[in-house]
Image (cartoon, rainbow, N blue to C red; front, side, top):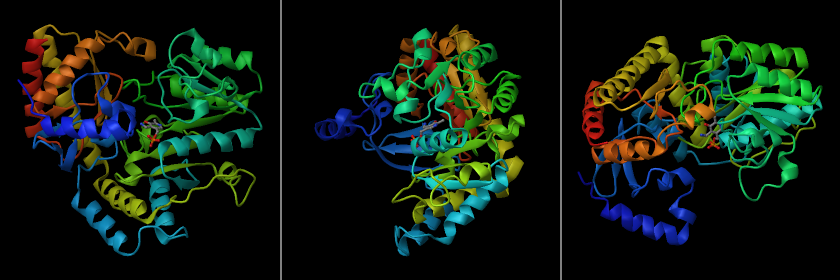
Length: 431
Ligand code: PMP
């Protein structure tokens, strides 16, 4: 099988001369799976179309936002209507409170929130307000959880050195991460040990309550509950980073699925309907520390941007109207494709562990189980790379890394599921 990517290759070469790696976000360069990355020209429904005229079933959905599918007519119309009234004012609009109210209707733990322009900013700001509220510095995170690329949170995942707070990127001073402790996900004993070692020092525990950024990893039954209890006991704030899971696994996110109330929540992706948006929010007494009410500074030229608010409102309105039936449909289609491909793997003798919830999932190339980042790392990434390329050549575009979640949209249906399973059957035969 060969895929003609001549035009994409030219575009990539041009971009590489101008932009590091030719990309504005590293994973887009396909380095971990190899091969040329297609350049996207347009998208519609469940499909991406590249510069060479190839069509792909999209399973990464802009890394999460596109739950309604691409170029969804009502979202497009809302953005167009907003654009004709002006693209940015740097002054308040009614749309901000409108979207905030929709978010809070679905996520009742959020009593107040503020919009920013990315998930990174949302988390960075939530950490700042948590530190100010508790008058403490240390943050506890988990290996394999990604919370954006701000300095204090880019602490290397994996192995014992992670607990020492060694930065996971060049250009981050040790001093900046000295208050970050990273430990194993799903392990309450390790959490207790960190609290015992740093009594009265931990401002917040932050996690992806369902992990997407190490591939999909579900919390074990008592993990979230245990964290809630420990945080309450220790006067530490519990922050759920639901940038990926918010409005993805259910209208109310992981917190509503599992019935756990965090102190602060971060959101992004879906609430912006594909435009740049993030948000952080939670208990009013914490959020009221933000300027201009309180001493915590936080700001943004384009925060609450009218186009982004319009896209978010048009997206959430459809999700709220669709309710449980919509989320059931998403889960059903996702289960069909996730398990359908797994069945083909089994027939072909390929080890594949499927993990997922709602419309996010991962095919780990290993026997499983995957309970934490260390487990995820045992996957055969070479085999995943070949699978990824084989699928791409057959018109199926998966996230180009083993350690990412795949997403299904409302526009994915049985036709796409069948085509995906058929492609996988073909690829497994050649692995
Ligand atoms: N938190 C989580 C859980 C994420 O998945 C991401 C992005 N994948 C971020 C934070 C950062 O968001 P952004 O890329 O919008 O800065």
